[in-house]
Length: 397
Ligand code: PMP
Image 1 (cartoon, helix red, strand yellow):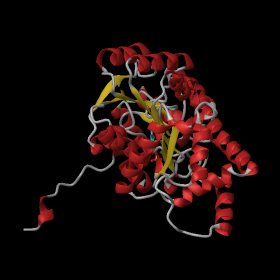
Image 2: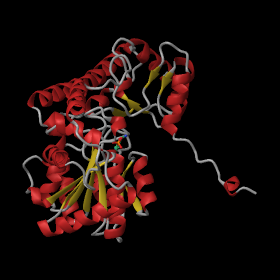
Image 3: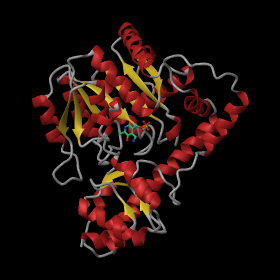
Image 4: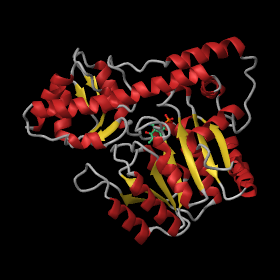
């Protein structure tokens, strides 16, 4: 018999499956609020103008397709350091490696922790991005969850979170935090909350692993780094996983970075050498193009200005959609108050819709939302807001 005949089919990715169904749906008014990709008013995810201009420059000037070094383009690595840490840290305490997307960064970090910090368990917020537990499990890390979402499903249970960490985390464990724009809930700690979280992390001697995939989508580029920088005021070791998929719209180019902060230059150098070993056995060295785009933009004052404007346009569209949705839901007279969406950040929010309501929105209205009720706010449309809200009100009544 054939050796592959015993292989069981793995379950399909829940969200990507919904997108297939969406693409096949003939409904002209269909809306896809499921995938984690920014959309403009036409439901498109266009290439940023700053990116196109940078690509043209690269096309004209690129002289080689030779390998990058294991840790990637030096200019790009300096850019990541500036965006994430600003002026807050001595450069020689931070090792930055360019990685294939934020997912690649998380996997490199997880493999590093598995081999170099073998006793560390990783504490994840409940809920978190579904790929977090999957990546940690694939790397062989043991993970635990800490309370994050309050019983109202619209706010942070800070006391519950701190109590869980205080009572259950062991010194030496790691804690996964979303730097901003928590996926899937949109619920972020306030600046005051971050101070308390940072204190507990310091007291319990936990290693922060900060997933930073939406910088600039919450309150702005610098503002979104406040939580991360607060944590770094309290501890001198951390790992940050950056993704430029969303804020540069570079999804398919796979542009990310893992940054390790160490107490001093010697420890930083040793850790970097181990991170490089992880990279060498995974994908050897990162792809050039996406990193070159970011580095080209950030080396050019005009392109940097254009990129910041484009990022701000994306951010403000999401904020506007949140406001418009809340207002329009009010005007349906259905009595459902969605004002909690105004306190949440980034593309995602938990809508509170049940799996049955989500099903009905899909079958009756061509509105695609994942079973948890998480919505991608950027998938909404200003011109279709009335009909969308009518549909939501109808399934909630
Ligand atoms: N972390 C979070 C929380 C995310 O939502 C995503 C993208 N969905 C990523 C990391 C990774 O993004 P990518 O690998 O596409 O850069």
